[in-house]
Image (tube, rainbow, N blue to C red; front, top):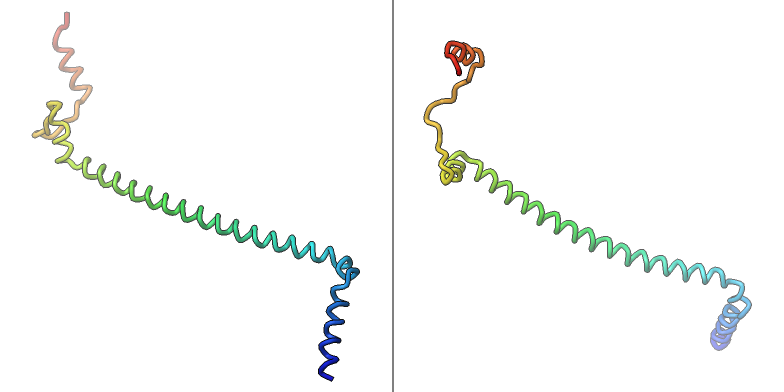
Length: 117
């Protein structure tokens, strides 16, 4: 009885791999092949997308660091003591007296009293 089982199973495999059966299921095999190609493409596309995202993230971090460095430099240079040092070569000095408001009416009264030729 054990000898008949392997022979029968071989016959079943031969029937299953019959040419007509292969022709009959050709569309299904074609579908499975195209599905495998799409699956492989999707994997490669996902890997590429992840690499691009990582690249953009590193660029973003670099730009953030550069922004913070430039911002700190601007904050440092805009301090009053640094501004005084920067404009000193031009002959500008810090005011010791407070600023005053020019009044247009007062200037007209002063100029109307004097005669201009």
